[in-house]
Image (cartoon, rainbow, N blue to C red):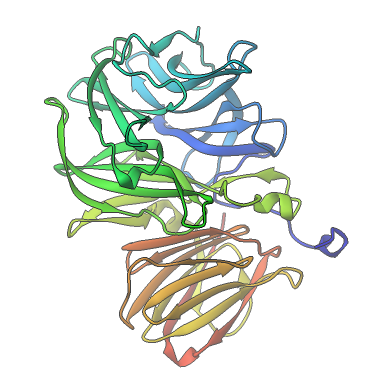
Length: 442
């Protein structure tokens, strides 16, 4: 598609999904409610829309819908090539970022864990001293050792770190613990497990009732030999104090190609929240194809619950406060910034069309499966559903998030509408029992 045909196309990246004014983002590195504001940390290249010069950025928000005060919290140096993924925790004196210290040259690639500190959640200081390295662990794999997630329980800090078992060629999570955020000691390992793929990435842990949720991403090989980036969750019966666990349930968080590196956090109401990078390493970014000004957005925050032994995902409730008006669909265009609730009792196909210069987004319910198609890439639900189907869809300029049957499954894709408004075309409209449009004012 030539640029001339795109001259009149709206090129906004997002209205209420996290993105930066300029540059590149990938993995979220923690969200924390601190001094009456949410602080979000993220992998960041402030200079260009490509993965390079990776720092940790920080921004703030009142409601996780609009963000401001974007800054670099921690940047690489001549001796440290990358400030890679990590997480954040609060102590009595301020915030601590725990991150992957990446050093690479022609002779060496080495990853270890370091920590930095800030009293104001903006200006972080570090000497890049390693808090986890060869001295800490019995078997330290410096090439496959990253993405520390900090979790605190009963005054003890637990560090969950992505790693790999070289003998079994499978991912595993190494768990360490410390009373003071400095002197971490080896506790136990989760895995190696086949569901962790050849390398696990971005593990994160939270607790719902008496059970723990471990979410993760992983790198694996598809049947055609190509690399795939997937995501999943474990529900665990875990005794951290005594270093043991059992797996109660394994599942996929989101079965679409664009959901990667999710991170857990506590909302200001102490709910278990989740946010994820909404992009993919497995094809060229949509921002480059459509010449957009920044690259990368995050999913809209989700609240996690356990229901009948399975993980349920629901949109963070703040978005409901931004509903401008709602009405039954009546074959007219409606704004891109909208939520849709669809109830169906049979097979259907809906085409969502923005600018005439871009292809539509297709949502198809066929033979008990839901399919989401854009740019010739098709994502499908894992579960089979009866003819009775309820969908909640969050729309934004370059994203399409579907919550199926009250969050029992989700499909999330990067799309491109290129317009402020959308029209839809329905095949088998008699099977759509109800469709509500809720326009958002953000």
